[in-house]
Image (cartoon, rainbow, N blue to C red):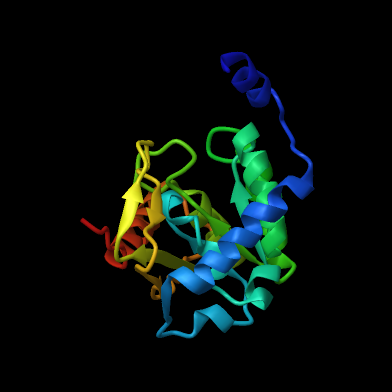
Length: 220
């Protein structure tokens, strides 16, 4: 068993057809097993302008089903350059989301340049800025820098569940329990000034972190 597990961990990329069944199962379970509500007071989910979006790493499970197909097709996500990140990037293709590979720990500059190009081409970019290693609920400055360089609004959003299981991972990754309520909350957009220096980046990083925490609700 340990030998099989070791061999699997050596595989850097799986064939795409492997993801079809879990992706289909997730789509069906989202429709049949959960109640869903979108709270978007600023109507940003259908905003035609490019946005830099941030959310927590531990709320990713049903993110792709929480927005329209059109919004997903116009969105790229910054995903870790690790092997696990490759699995996630391939999986998200089944929901129409393109991947930008890189993180604060690996190929970060490539991801930043890619995010800027995506914004300038009219697409949205999503970051999970407390990943890929944490600390939990502590964001990094990458998305703030992208918003500052491109002029795009910085938008916090979070998928809260009324009941969930929490994995024993650094972020306590959440798996919503069947028949619980999922609430997608889109926060107030943050206008980030251009050409921020290090002090300005830290100021707006803290503002963004507080804005994301403000709309976050952790079930007991």
